[in-house]
Amino acid sequence: MASVKTKTVWFCKECGNESPKWMGRCPACGEWNTMVEETVATGKKQSPVAVSVPSSGHKPMPLSDIDSSVENRISLNNGEVDRILGGGLVEGSLVLIGGEPGIGKSTLSLQIPLHCPNLKTLYVTGEESCRQVKLRAARIGGDDTNCLIYSETLMENIIAEARSIMPDLMVVDSVQTMYSQNIESSPGSVTQIRETAAMLLRFAKETGVPVILIGHITKEGSIAGPKVLEHIVDVVLQFEGENRGTYRLLRSIKNRFGSTSELAVFEMTGKGLREVSNPSEMLIPMHEEGLSGVAVSAMLDGTRPFLIEVQALVSSAAYGTPQRSATGFDVRRLNMLLAVLEKRAGFKLGVKDVFLNMAGGLKVNDPACDLAIVSAILSSNFDFAIPSDVCFAGEIGLSGEIRPVSQTDRRVMEAARIGFKKIYVSSFSSLEQTPEGIEVIKVGDVPALCRTLFRN
Ligand code: TYD
Ligand code: MG
Image (tube, rainbow, N blue to C red; front, side, top):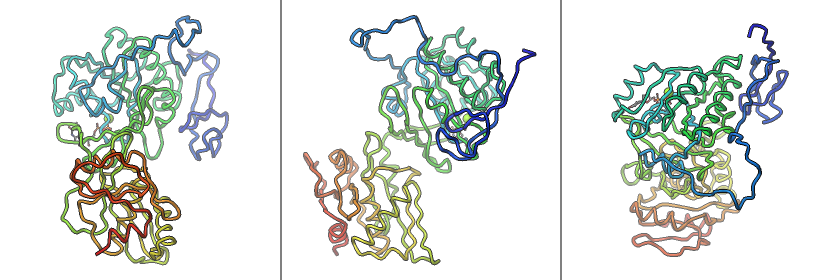
């Protein structure tokens, strides 16, 4: 090793693109200021980085001859996690759990083995001592005789240990602390992260042991974010939401074995993360009747319908330029909705500050929320409360028309189940059947919405 030559290269920490010199903008992904300097060994051939299924000498074969029996899935005894994985953890899969520090990645990944006493788990921690893990496990509770804690950061040792133990599940916390001897650069660098993930992927595919890998996202971006890993792993689960509140949202953003954009909701309690299997109840906070600026949207996240409260505040602009701010919603879309209200329905909001907030720290991109957003804005503007048993599902077009949204039936069903009495939808929605106890009100455009909503 004494005469290993090294050279300096630049990596983009967003996409992993390699370049011999520094550039302000990554030519591959177009991001600015993402190039980081790293030293890599030259001469000695490095092990291949990207691997998929190990080559076992198979010849190309006709599609019809390939065994298509379903993958073996392991239930993790956690309804929410099983659901967003698409029905349990697939054998030999590599799952990345990403999120900001302190959001609950380590808690979740320790809770899974503790709640599955029948799975022999190897829990590798590079961040905390065994004692710290023990203290956390004591808070979470559960059987821990089958859970082996291993405090190590050298990947070669971890893989050797895992091969001799052959666990049913392996957890690695976190990818940024692990390193391989074959790579010159320090832990947390793009090359180390890619190599660590590739070694774990090779191990998972060769042995069939599922691996849960934890990755940090830092706001400053001083270490490589897990973005470079997304191509390598099979599943990416991402924690979102604010870690100030008690609710934690876990979203599947990539899944080779199931649908994406599924959302799981947890509550951080003194005993770890509790599953919230009925998120509608958490997203519609209880408050007194008669508050203006509040409307409930029947939205769909992934395949699951739920109801979320939208809050708007409209006030006279204190400065020359009115402020528009949105939490959990695209501010450009908010501006578009305001323009529609101004131009197509004659509301003078151009001189008003408008603030919008989605309950529970959720990030919403379902266009069906438009109708609730517009209703909340108008409600705040007129200081006229919308009754609390009313909800909305509709998209707003540029000419002020209310357009039908996908799966209106399921949204209406969910609203009826929670106990809403009225739901506003587009007049072009086709409904198969209306459940008992809910009135479906069809409206064609924004002026018609105002007429029916603020009638009295
Ligand atoms: P943690 O899983 O350590 O976050 P990450 O691994 O994503 O950095 O979770 C950290 C927070 O969770 C910490 O502020 C303490 C809190 N917590 C609880 O509230 N209850 C618990 O039972 C546990 C284990 C942690
Ligand atoms: Mg942690």
